[in-house]
Image: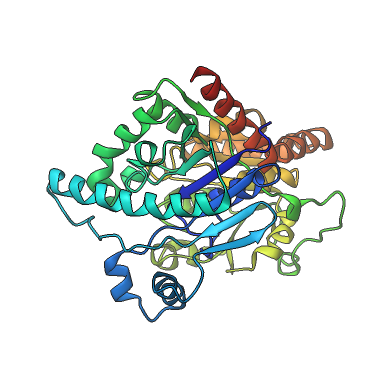
Length: 400
């Protein structure tokens, strides 16, 4: 446990992002026992021009002009900084030396804003926690001189075209200079260890309280009542980049007595797929997150039929925690990230694997197995996740 320290958090997601954020959850957990400054991404020139009429960018322009405060207290022990100072938009630059020249300038502008806020808050001897900001975080160790510099990897960003352009070259440099690298996947931890011996898997936090069907009654969704059992179900975005459409179709084709229920918004490939013509495949559509437990409650087996690619191999599948938190038998594709769940799930790759494992899951489910699944999912709290991060921060501190 780390207590009564000052921690500065930088990353690639601002506090006012609409979607869920690991970095925000971690910062909030840090703030339970420490003073925390959460730093938004700074405003870049192209975004300022193109999105100047959007509420978020108008807010940042007013901060830049001194018409609104740059430092806001969110709640006890946690502040949010809107960095002053415009940075240059440089990702389109192909020349490495010119990119590095401008990136150093951007880092200096960013560091000056952070240093100003830290002084106003009286921060000293602080820990710097960097969530995947491989460009704007590249020189912060030298510029801010934190007591410990932590780099956090939770996605294979360099497989994305935007990050690949310069990230393949620069992220290893940042990893090598960090005091400690923490990761939510063994795949990322192994990658980080190529450049820094102090690269560790710390797991993932997840708030599964919504899926607690022990302390409160959760009834199956009403529109599942007319669907024949057994119901094999999935909840989440139906993305053809991440999910195997052909695998789902093969399962439905070979087991016509099973109902395949896919809950969530669809991309264009899913919308145009043969799945919509199969009588035993149902699409309830997009549903608010608050009612997803009702659908999981009605499933006999939950599935996560992922493709195996750069987007999925190391990506922590939070939905698995949600399935397990409700005690559900779960069949998933055997990616590296799923090794974390091996003892509590059924893992396969092919259509034959899935059919065999679903049959096994249906046949051997019992209250004892359900309880073990619930206990495992409930151990993946943000508190436990941050305790693991603390462990390696303390290790790095002692080493220094």
